[in-house]
Length: 212
Image 1 (cartoon, rainbow, N blue to C red):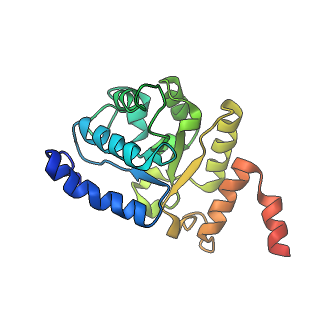
Image 2 (cartoon, rainbow, N blue to C red; image 1 turned 135 degrees about the vertical axis):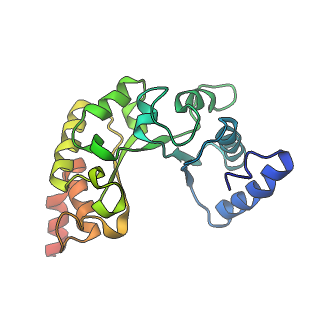
């Protein structure tokens, strides 16, 4: 779709309208935009503005940049445009209200091994409640050095919660094999439970439900 969204008015809407129909038909409450090829900043800006116009202010729009693209203007970036500039431009008409609700930053590689890289992103000007730390939940899902074990990840989450009261939370790529690099018998829901324990202290509650 990215090939056609940069097109002229008629071409853009020939692809945008089926997307809008899909969103409306299934009553989706949001969309996550992952742009992994070089495009002009006007491509996501036009799409975001069109979705805001047609779906209204309650529709959730999120994006998936590399964490490095959020750490500095010229950081490593798959999208080709500045997320700093896009975030400044993507506001509701006549206000400073951000149209992009939050960013699911790809904190792969060593980024999940400790708080420093997340700190770099927040120090660059992003509010912590708008930056979700997305990590590999299985070593098979990305570069070999991109995975960290759940216990290390739990420590990182707890440290970040102390540092940032509004810490945006965690996401894992991808769910179907989550935790399989931690233990052979670990199920995806178990990995999610352990992340939830670090985020919310849920283990006692969930274990109680299991015992019932």
